[in-house]
Amino acid sequence: MPRVFIVDGFYDDAVWEESRWWQQAWLITLALIVFPPAGIVLLWISKRFNLAPKIISTVIFALGFLIILGNLGGVFSTTTPVTADSTTVPAANATTTSNTAQSAAKPAPEKKVYGPGETWTVDGQFALTFTAASLTDERNQFSEQNPAQVVILSYDYENLGVEKNFMELYISSNNFKVIDGAGVMAATYPASTSGNPQKTPIGARCVGAQQAYGLVNASGEITVQVEVYGNNYKSYPASFKLPIS
Image (cartoon, rainbow, N blue to C red):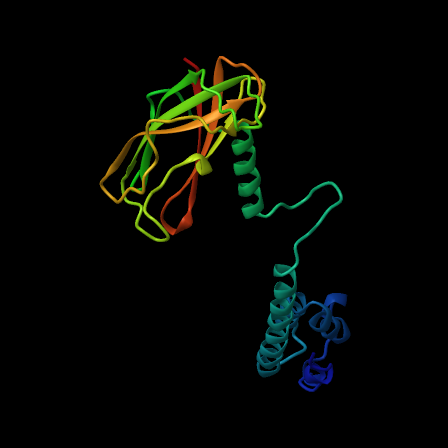
């Protein structure tokens, strides 16, 4: 900040006269240092100073005041006021919170459960249809299982675009989890079937494939959870509920 002698150096003793208290040199000098706008006003209405000192002092103190304002403006612009009664939430967080609340309000769509004769299609990959879940009285004398029921699953599938990697599309018991009416897992059973799954190239269908399962509990309906791998070994799950006939 400019020193006091800048103003005093231009003081004109020749025009000294008795004046009001607010025209005193010391007061004008103090005002220029403490609050330049007020000091500049007092400087220009005073008759104690010539024009040249007034202009020079005005330029010096005005520039100094503007520099101080600029520095203070930078400090306040980078400071975010925080009070005990309010919490500033960034706009991005507020949007995320709003979206989360909306998502929570909307129930997740239920996955479709397929029935007999309904086709589960994965576009560009494959299609699968269970045509029947039929009881059979056949029992294998060499099996250690003692199932309450033996069910033959009949199904068809089509290769819509699964490329040959390890093998062409092949859907078998390895892709199925069969659950009886009491919620107990069923196991494959060595019963006679009339059709086997086949390796199926793109554009071809496997029709009449069958797999036999032994149920621990007698049931009127079974659940079949399916997982089939498509291109790039991506897995696709689906669920079927099939009445036993």
